[in-house]
Image 1 (tube, rainbow, N blue to C red):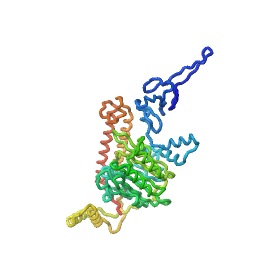
Image 2 (spheres, rainbow, N blue to C red):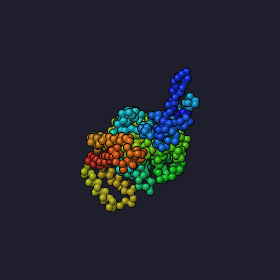
Image 3 (cartoon, rainbow, N blue to C red):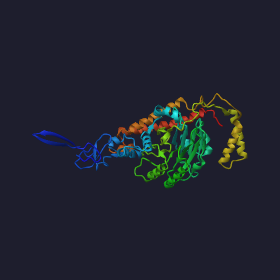
Length: 509
């Protein structure tokens, strides 16, 4: 058999009979049509199980090419689809020249080692690495109002926190950002697109031990791209970290041009760009992906995420969230973190240049405001009188008046230490933690159930078809998903109730 794609082919066996050498050919069979593979026929060999398939049977057999390797229908479901266009270049260099480019080898290694993590697996495998070095985390939160509390609760499950956190699709303007706080972090919010009530807005949270300021030149909002960049004055070299959101309703060609112009004004090193680019890097022969690669790689940036980041029932997984960096030398690890907050997985990046310098020092908690019952009643009365006598013209005037009256009613003349702090009076209780763990377990059960094949023909290839299938496998998958979804909704209600019952003393500066 002519081995055009590899494979064991026909095996020649010989025996001596009556002084003559006689060959008997044991022909390989195609695992799809079960016919012999004849001499000269082209075929594919599965990279995992080594079964052989005729070239003409490749598509009908539902085989696929994943990560530049061929896999049969049975094996492809167990393979993680990965973005790594550099691996072929390295293999080619090693084969042809016996050498490889150190930069290509580094980025290929990062993409090959990029993995999806659960919270518990991350704590076990990478918790200490994050604590020793630092890093950044990005999530498309799909609305602060509906998902921010759940996001904060999930962050509490991490053994160590990321010094830099970025969000997209917050649907929140800077005037409302004070409602959405993360203990120990300073927040930076970009304005949303004025014509959109949802699907807009980016934000960043930076650990209070880091000295960060907004980079105004690199922060803007257009119909095609939203960006927010901050500069962190680090002990060695300044870091420039940003978050980007490309709305799918915008013009993709103009978005690529705007991204190119943005990258040109950023420093040549020490830059990390997180975001939801809405460009699926797992898509093959895609013009938009090619243009994105040309602009990004041509300016010295490399994507660090290679596995699926967006996963929605009934839809094909995609890698649309990513972290672009021109600081590969200090990059240790990248991956996705399944927080179960939205259909997007969080993406992270551990980098030796992102450590919070004062992480071992204890933050002194000081009380600046006194929210006692008497002050609250006084505040409500004065606020009502103020609004009746001078009605605000717009939301900005409302916020200004509200803040002025709040300071008058609650702010202490002299700050004092308080025994009741967010550390000993949290709203995140052990019951909530247990409920979050249960949600994660239900999610894992649903994921495992999805891998079980349906007895009905082609159902496994069409996730939406499982809803109408009566077999036990599909019913189990639907049941697991409904249990996970119901528990997630209950968890959100529990969080809201817990926050109403236990409101931590705010540390406002």
